[in-house]
Image 1 (cartoon, rainbow, N blue to C red):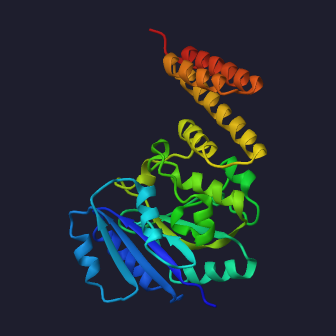
Image 2 (image 1 turned 60 degrees about the vertical axis):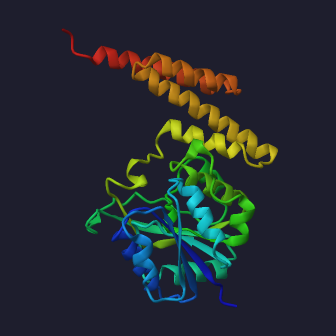
Image 3 (image 1 turned 30 degrees about the vertical axis):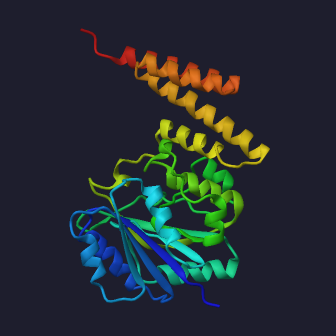
Length: 307
């Protein structure tokens, strides 16, 4: 049986970018899809323009602006009925064989979810070159790599079985990862429940511009990483996974403290070190981070020009 794919596009005041995103779905060589566009209170005529497209597979839903990307994506997924769910941000584009390749790969491997290589483009659509070592993809059991933030993923490349998406708890709507980290935290929960298949070919074009969330997101932010672990720990984890996540959470808090100490922000450094200690940080992690912060802070002060 050929599976139906529910494609979810969340959008807010993104004309004409969202029109191009929709066209890239229509251009798919895999025809068994339905598209749910969730218009999060746009005031630029998005709903009216997209509703005028004559394709029975496209549904446009509107609601007052809430601004919570995870909640909007969850609403879009719930409005569809496909056995598979794929997500596309309204400023990104799919290449024509995207769904064909990933649906086939999931069928052949039995994987619960799939992601792929992508390329970056600027606001005008011009491709932005990436270094050769920019991508780190892996199939199968990828829990360890995700927990250590070693893999390269974007939500616009994601295809997931609906039953897995629901079992994993969908996108978090926790304010601690509000539009910054709710995607990666979901990847972790998906990986804990099912193997993934990575498609090592560019299937998606990710747009970078001043108005998108990805432009301000930094997976290297120690504070963000700590929040992702913290929200993950609020989900249902087995005892072993919870211990690992707690160790990584408290370590990232201590590392954030070291970063602030290096910058001379003593109050914030004390806050992070305090939280790390209160939540049971390993003494070795805590001590190493503190020593590093003191050392690097001292080097920073020594390097300042003397008056």
